[in-house]
Structure formats: C-alpha cells, structure tokens
Length: 112
Length: 112
Image (tube, each protein chain N blue to C red):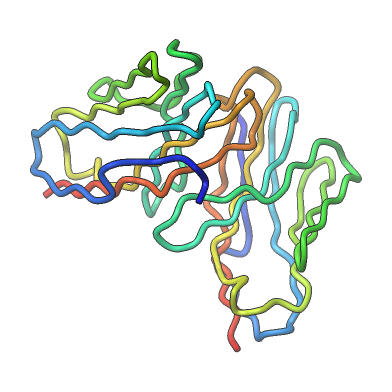
C-alpha cells in the first residue's frame, strides 16, 4: 500500500460527458502528480501541484483541468470526453521534487 | 527531445534463468534515472534511483546499473513473483517531476 488513495477505481461513461477523479496523497506529501497510461503510449505526465499551486504541466489537454485543495487532496476534471480518453489515470505524490514517486492504484476510465 | 527506449518489450524466462533489461535514454542533462515495477492493474512501485554513470544499486534479485547512455536492470535467478512490467524513467535537469519521462516498459514473465 503506497498510501496514495484514488477514487473511483473504475468509471464508465459516454462521449461528451464530464468526470472528476480524486486523489488523496500520502500523509505529509505536498506534491501531487497526475499521469495518464494508455496501452500504446505508456505513462504520460499531465500536471503537477505543489502545496496547492500548479508547478508543472505536461501534455494535458485543454479539456482537462486539475486542482489541489488546502487539505492537499487533488482532483482531475476531464470534460467533453472522447473515446481516446479511455485510459488509466494515476495520481502520485512525493515529499520532494524528485523522481521517487508513490503511485495510487489508478482510476480506469472507459468512454463508450 | 528527451527520450527513453526500453528493450525488449516482453521477456519470458524460466525460473532461475538470469537476464537483463535495457533502458536507453537521451536527455539534455540527466538528473536521475529511476526504475519502477508495475503489476497488472496496480500503480508503479519505486525500485531504484541512479544518479551518475558507474553507479549500481541492488535489491534482492535485482541490480540496476547506469552508463552515460543506458541503464540495465539485471535479474538474477528470477522467481515467478518477479513477473511484472519494469518501467524506466529519466529526470532531466530542472525542477520537479515535470521532467520525468517514462519508457513504455518491459513486460517480464517468469515461468515456474
């Protein structure tokens, strides 16, 4: 158990809909990262927050947004969903800006 | 552009048959190279960090090494429980995991 909690574990929705994925980092970790993992592209970095502020952006679509709240949990919002958004979405946290990330078990999104 | 290439894509070993996984990287300035293990349906689990050429790290049957252009993950006398996907990631000079590039992984299967 990494200590990172993600909900929901599975989500099935239709094209054009909007979903919110939630992440609670390990106790004490200030940094939260969101990654997308699809079969053909591997793990792709989306966005990082540090103590409530956006720290870095990767290949995140404009239809996607995220935030980190004062209690340090984070939410990833995906809107106008397309079939190609079907993937595993991972949240990770760390105590410092290093590559030693602790990943949650992911949220599997299926867009039909 | 920063790039990570892992080979082979998949590897089947008999229990006890040692082998190596390769991670070739191209990065503007290496801050760190990381190995993660990912079990099906789970988030990646951190294994090792290597910072400079010549460095080696060991954990049970796994040993990671680093040169200026590639890293190897050596698996000695593997057991079925070592079956997983092994991911390599590099962190380029900069701040935070925005510079963390993952390879697509090597899927290892160890047959009893």
